[in-house]
Length: 391
Image 1 (cartoon, rainbow, N blue to C red):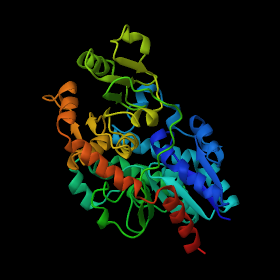
Image 2 (cartoon, one colour):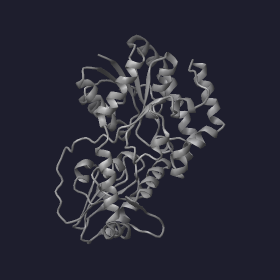
Image 3 (cartoon, rainbow, N blue to C red):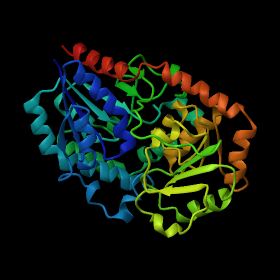
Image 4 (cartoon, one colour):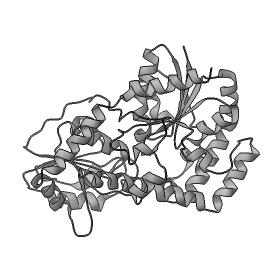
């Protein structure tokens, strides 16, 4: 029996892919502790892990709504928040890891505190990457997105100040790259297929491309028309009332059934009386909808895109952040979606998806690669392999 500790950030797109891995490890008789946030407690405990809350320590959780929207956009600010959180958790996590003596730490690529404490205490480490893996080869293919984000972080003079703060607390780091970046010497689980990952052949054997982890649907969606369009801009940067209203105007009284999920920031009541073919909700069971959908208009978060393509659903793409632009670029390169721009509007893009069957064919091809990946079992195998190597 192994003792394994997970660290993650309070985001469903980063947490959900790991839950199947936790279940797999627990089913094999291993013990799992999971450091996360109260918003994720139910899901993590349901997977069989011992949940440990970080809410009282995490700086990011104390941000007001205005500052929270800066994370991921203002890169120097993002780096500061990540280091603040690492240092806020330092005493608690360092003490508890020294006492627990885990066989392995598995940390999300954005949960710096997990990798940092593994480096500090010499504990075997696995990076959990819910976006694409990044190196110089994939950066050239992606053209934008993750590569630009990391380059800006590493070249910012403000990050040297953050590194000094970490060093002062005993963390053996030379740059932010030591804890944010992946490299060929770090065991890494990537929740996508080798085919969808740009330049997967250029990464070392320490990388395991296990495919997306797709949970079962919790509900059943009734399809009332021949074609179902699903619209969601995610759970974070989704204060987009004008965008949603434009979608309603474009798709009103068409032959399409439209299901739109708008999150908590936008009030559903403010949409007023809706056209008969359009339904708007704060939240939906996305898996249940995608099992029935024909097109997904998405912000292109990695988790949403993976779920869409797993079910062979092509995308109309409106990315909002650097990371999302990188994901959209990959979908575009593989011919499984269309990007919205100033000359291509919502209805035109959706109609083009239906008029050209290659989008559906390419989405189905990616789906096949996802389903042929090793999944949660492969991720668990990787973690146990790292535990055994360290003996």
